Image (cartoon, rainbow, N blue to C red; front, side, top):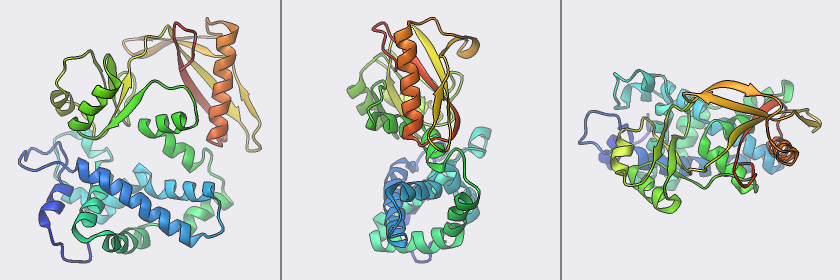
Length: 319
């Protein structure tokens, strides 16, 4: 699988160890996953930059997103045999269908980097991941001959809360203060920075109130993390809000965009129960929500129909 003899076997044992493993003497692979994610992104970025010298930044970003998106990496990991090698709680039915094997692949890249250095890692990624499992021409051709709507960039951004929030914050859209966490130490640091009350959420797959926990202050981050069923999380400041709104936006390939009147969403037991249209908000708040929704669609170069959710606060601001 590696194409070379590893020097530090302990690193690879950690890379294969998911934190759900019953073998508690093993350190989990979360830190290596974090490192591998960064190294893999750099290697893929370097590869694409040199392979396509005349392509735009947008094209390169989209191609990288197609390669390193969570589902793609998980599929590659399974084909490489990492599903059988990963040490995890095999009695957890959710984990069996989740994307932890892609996380293992990233951790493996991190282990190779620490064990053999950047150049050997670059060779490993090229020979063991890119060449056998990634058909760049096919990825390119798909969009040339049959446009993907929404784009890979839009899907990649929306599939993970940290990417989603970072995308919005980097472009000046209003978001609640947030921080990401991949270990309980990082969660501890995030709580120290964001404060309480706050809400810790799974970075992916959460819905209808699942995969969330409100922190009031005084909780033990180690206990919170140990009982949290996710590899990565995002911590958000708890914002007292009056109501939830959603705005549907339709955007065509030529950039024409239309936003519909905001709907006001009411929930029962964290599940959507009733939507009221038009929402019971002032004309100014409704207009702001529609403007922001259109700007988000433009920023993503979105083609199709999407929904943008907001919370209105006492100061009549949309988040």
